[in-house]
Length: 369
Image (tube, rainbow, N blue to C red; front, side):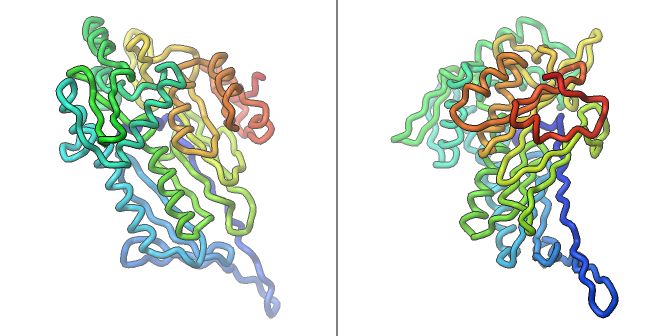
């Protein structure tokens, strides 16, 4: 399964739909209905007079929640989405033996492997991000991920010789893609492609594309809390209200809120998957330049973008750039991308437009810029 790589700054969706009160014959009646359940497991309810369909799946090694609004929404939509997720989970997994990425990794240093259009696409996109971010985002990070194994049993710093060996196998330039033949080959034996850096964002985008094709333009797509797409607006036309998780507190504790429309939120941070050794926190965001978890004074970064795949990759690569270089990089992008960084001293540094939109509710955090 794809690693749940971005779960630290868990974004808790607070979809606030205000029930409409209607005065009739001298009394008020709540028009929101109690949820019913379809034979396929989706919950049907009426929010503010608009039908909604909601279902939760456990895929991608995480909880996926989809809520769609509109009279056209039906169980078949949820069934189609589940099939899409299960297909991509298998195709992009480096641990499922019947998956395409598993086959590519097994053939590393030996031969090219034919893959589906979807797998070819996500590999090509991952290499594009790697090139654009000078290898800070690197889809061949797998050997280092396996070595450290943080969040999956790893509780000590590996020997330097082992880190050096894994680091030598981490180089996106050693991935050979033949678009005409639809094949992927890893140049060195022992290399491991890992789509954990963009897998959930890519899946979220595919779900959004599908819903738009079905004429469903109001939805909340939440992949594990770390990749969230707010499709369109709420049924009443107002923006979605998103609660932002405090990385130092239990889940559900917010540091602030932000309103979004037709936008993506993606986060990376250091506070959920880690271990402590000699007073140092070793977290799961590994720097391919050093082979070690990044130690740059950042606690988390949250990216807001029109595209979930972009946001997913940026939240890893920009985190590794650090505050100053990361902010400069985002400002240099041709497309509109907003972000805010949280440093170890609980200061928030936000891009100018985002600062105006972010409402802090926890006095522990303050804007530094």
